[in-house]
Length: 348
Image (cartoon, rainbow, N blue to C red; front, top):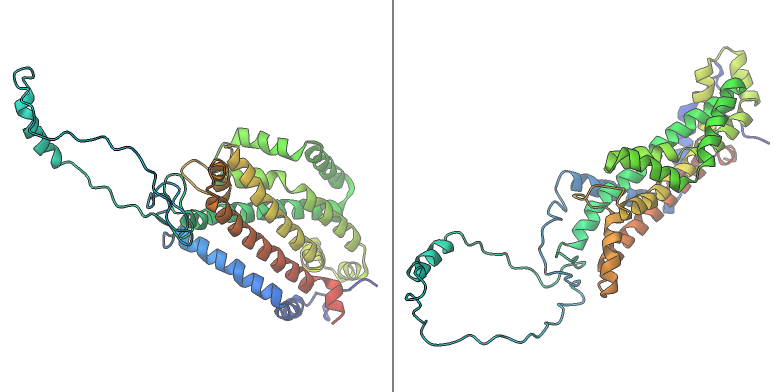
């Protein structure tokens, strides 16, 4: 038996009661709550990095090149043959070099412009990269770019796919046929080639990556939303709403959309994970973020050459940050899906 959204006397869905019941179900899922706390922590970390409270100096070379993590200890010193310094008085070469008397004067003047190089640390909490930059600061700053790209691109793709899928599934006819033709055109081209084509035109940068992934990643959610709207548009509660005079927009957004929101959330979580991976690929190939920015993708690209030399900490830091966020976000959206699923709501 299909779940029917409860209606009030005016035939309008009691959306406030639905969301309250969904929140009660979500609070009962401890895994979902813990995952939401982790995702919120990443959001606060990204905000702090954006305003410069943390990881603002990620570009500074604070350690020696490839400084190991603190728990490993400093790297062994390399022995080198020292060149012996000659002793004794300086040889007077004024007879053959007319500038020799000025050397002492120039040396005193040069001391006024000498800069003292800051002492670099032998170890860093999570290690350093080949330039001596703190890997932990880079991973935090990289979260700001990678997570923003993944979430923003997923929201753009979800909005495009949801709107087009709702229109195609609810109205059908010529509009549905035209949208199906657009969908078939996009899906007939391999996804990676489509991304590269858009990237070659749009260029590098965060905004370009978000636009590229959003314009190329909406087809999957379009197909699912269209199927759900085809199914729900002929059900009794939608027909009843139409009979009492509910507008087209009300039927689409207030009656059908809440009943398919769990499908949209699942696809949103899948898109976020996929788009973070796509950003890694684009940045690795030089089509992602600009060279003066850092993301988890650029960190993994740098770690490839470092790993050959046995410096694994940048790879581990970027991978650990990515794994924690992706896992927490997936579990949170799974809990939201269960809380919003109309079948589970009807079982209460």
